[in-house]
Image 1 (cartoon, rainbow, N blue to C red):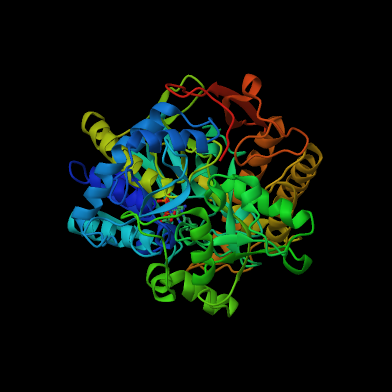
Image 2: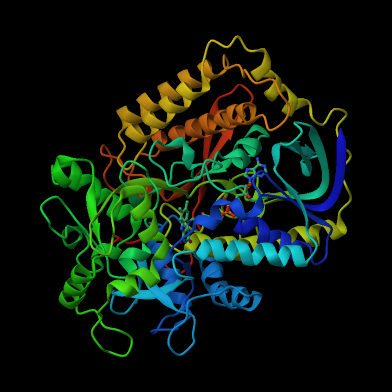
Length: 597
Ligand SMILES: Cc1cc2nc3c(=O)[nH]c(=O)nc-3n(C[C@H](O)[C@H](O)[C@H](O)COP(=O)(O)OP(=O)(O)OC[C@H]3O[C@@H](n4cnc5c(N)ncnc54)[C@H](O)[C@@H]3O)c2cc1C
């Protein structure tokens, strides 16, 4: 087996992985392994913006950003980590700017900012402009900028290598096993430190904004190695996906003045969030859309409502809301301005829907979007192995795969891109520092044995089952019973179905026995990851008998701080069962209170 050795190994080349690799490579030998070509990572699809209280266009403070994030998290976020992220945010944006990221500008040349859901002026409660953006291609620009910086810093890249196992020796990270997709060969990467930055797992659900690559490889791998997963029951549904397709329409559309209307032509968010209306947090708006549809106020009785960004509507509602420009003049937009600020959104709608958002309404429905839960870490990206926050030597995680936890039960828009650059940076710095004082762990006799066993199964199984059927059934039951609203009975049904699918999965046989880009084999392994994460998500959700953030139960509609102000830690035990434990939420300044918008 081909073997490589690096002090720092980063798995994943999205925003978090590139930032980690960039910082680690300043002092340690560093490689980034990625199953996709780096600039195809999901970060490249992020549209609306990255949050930081720069105060470019109106008064703002990191403390307001901190409070909004705590409130948005429905008080489940760890407040020390949130404060750290929001204070680091301003510096992080200027750093990206100095690396060459082409942010949009205000007429005076400052970095342009726009409003986003849940971000407010803490004095008036009104939306505040906190999202820094490069048109509606912010993630694309971050990814390109960081990739160029990594190339400049001589980071070694292993593109189109799929990591399939983590090696742990003496309780510490020792490297990874990966498959080179072009040859099908297994490679061994021996390392002093490993940083997981593999992104999310939103392909569990039927309607999703997530890329095909979001198969949860990172958490599935670490869970099989005995490490816990934190708060997996919390998954965010974004209110505005393109009807039936799930493709995301950024919240930036509402930041630019777009509004939601139901089948009766009502601006229904006035009823659910009287102060911030269409800019309430995502969990609140997704539930409102669901209820409108359930009560028969979808458009034409169908499962969708409209998003309206036609200039005449924007201007009408901006006047009713008394919205002003920073200089005090009334807020008015033209079709050209919509086109300039949201070019990709206009394009998506024209291509996928045949609808022109400047003159027509966009049919939308909530879409599975973001994993709040994941591999538990502290605020330096160090992975935690238990409820006492004990760190695992040499193991790190950052980005959507990690649970720091800064997003708690519900993430605010723009805070993920921020999370990537802040915690990616610290994970990279910490890993490089650790590597300096650490030796390479000795490797086990047959390091690839566990990985090989997982793949051999697909070549020897009896072939009675088909992976596509299993994937389809998983996505459907998770969308129906583990979606925006949940109930004990529905979740129990989902769990039984997932366990049945896991049993059927053992019979899946891959028909392509070739070695070169055998994506049938790789996709089968990825489906196993999704099934395992669907099970953990459902088990964690069933136990939590309350509603909080993205976890909304019809049988337990209230938040229950007495019993449930705590993080779930889920472990896969050797007998195949999932065991749940809990750890306290870190509360510093903000005592939990009722959330109103
Ligand atoms: C459509 C869309 C729009 C969004 N818009 C915004 C926004 O405007 N603002 C905001 O803050 N957030 C936004 N988000 C959320 C945010 O973009 C993501 O959470 C974030 O980009 C994830 O970054 P990451 O670095 O963690 O992972 P990714 O960018 O997804 O990168 C994951 C990397 O891991 C690699 N990888 C995965 N598994 C393996 C494996 N087994 N072996 C090797 N490599 C592997 C992949 O190749 C890839 O390079 C959006 C998300 C979506 C889906």
